[in-house]
Length: 294
Ligand code: GRG
Image (cartoon, rainbow, N blue to C red):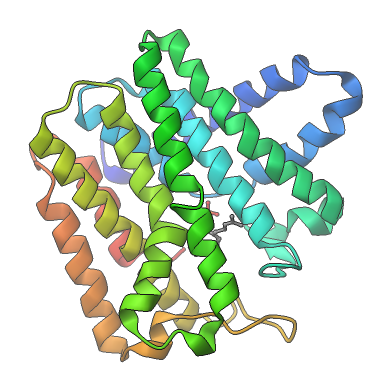
């Protein structure tokens, strides 16, 4: 099976699980709360690439775990990612009217509901992660997944990176290491968590763990760099209207050729950590990030 067909099949499997999980959740709560679930569903079904759950499932398969067994963890990571996008679009943060080609959550449901939809996805992520218990993992393994998700999505990871991004301001970030520190946390941490979580679920030798960590770290930063490149190449993509604050960006601190070199270096490094005999899909994902157009 080629990469595209495989990726489509995987995205379908993940999306199907996400929908079923949300349906089950809706059925378990009072009818008067169903509009809350509608706001959660609106963003989670919003046509994202499902990159993080794809990575999680693929890293799990690399370690010998079937995709189906880790779907609760894949769903949890997409919930966290989606909550972060809903909150990032709010007027207090990035003030974006659209997301994934449609009105952002607060434009559709209002700010108060959007804040709560993000909060709900964040909390449900941890409850979803606990569903791993149904797939014959031990309590200790599941707890380690919860600890990893909480570490990389919280202040030590994504939230911390976002805090620095918001409070420092583009004009105060004047060096590449400083910019990369923010990107490694804001965007990279969740991508790294996606490949680390499967290592909590199966006995993994130290060398493989170290290599997967290096792969995830390199890929996380590479993803943000590719995002900056896409931003600078297609102004319309995230055109920053008059309401928006300038964002720290690679293109402001490096020459165009240098950004590409940094991206290529990171992707090559990520690929070098993977055993190509069993990790072709992890390599394909890295190559996708090198050349992605969306
Ligand atoms: C609000 C706590 C909090 C955190 C927000 C990641 C983030 C932190 C904000 C998103 C800002 C942004 C657009 C960063 C660029 C990289 C990025 C995360 C892009 C969106 O991810 P994709 O391309 O999105 O995987 P899809 O829609 O495909 O899921």
